[in-house]
Amino acid sequence: MTGSNLIKTCETIIIIGIFGLALGPRSFLSQLGIETNGRFSYCLAPDRGLSTMFFGDDAQISGDSTREVQTIAMNKMIKYHIYVNGISVNGIRLPINLSVFEFDPIRNNNGFFVDSGAPYTFIIPKSAYNTLKAAVVMYFREKYGWQPIPMPRSEKSNFCYATYPSDVQGFPSVIFHFAGIRQEGEINWIMNNNYLFTKINGGFCMTILSLDEPGPSLFGAYQQINFKILFDVVNGLPSFVPQNCQEASL
Image 1 (cartoon, rainbow, N blue to C red):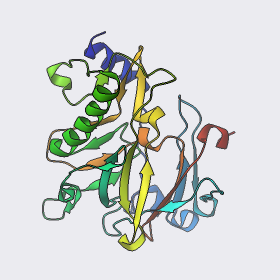
Image 2 (image 1 turned 90 degrees about the vertical axis):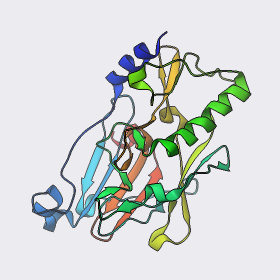
Image 3 (image 1 turned 180 degrees about the vertical axis):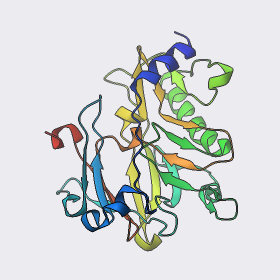
């Protein structure tokens, strides 16, 4: 199987959508401000399942003894911008210069944004992405002797293997570390490997990619599947909890 065949297949299963949820005068949240109160929640279901979205008082989130609701610090002036404290692979914090995830107010660029309209997570610059990619490549090479398949020059940021792990094999643990409320403490978003690595024709691709610089990094839809996510945009408080979104929508 060639890398181009993997990518062409992968393109048919992306999750994407655009909806006006900023606080500008023409946004949905602003035009129906009395009803929405600047709040909304959603739960992205896998496999083209039915996803749900709620606004205002109906936008609620809860957990239980095994699923803790966690709240991330969000920049109140720059909506949906969150603060990255680091990325770990199998418990090892990667040597990434975190300044690459800081928003540049002069150029109105860079930063790290939650964006369900992006199909995948995109990490910019490539130096940060390549550090994550190298750690994952090392995991599969040392554990199973696997090497990623050659990719077309136009798809060099894509990252695929021609073999899928068996029941006795597995994927590495990948965690994104975010700043907590008022940037106190640290919130760990543990990636769901079912959507961090998507199965394609007997192999798999990682659903974290890179793009040409400059630009912001985006935390995309695949990394949000099967999480209930609540945004209190007015107060700058995004919260999340693991949840079976397909069951939640029934």
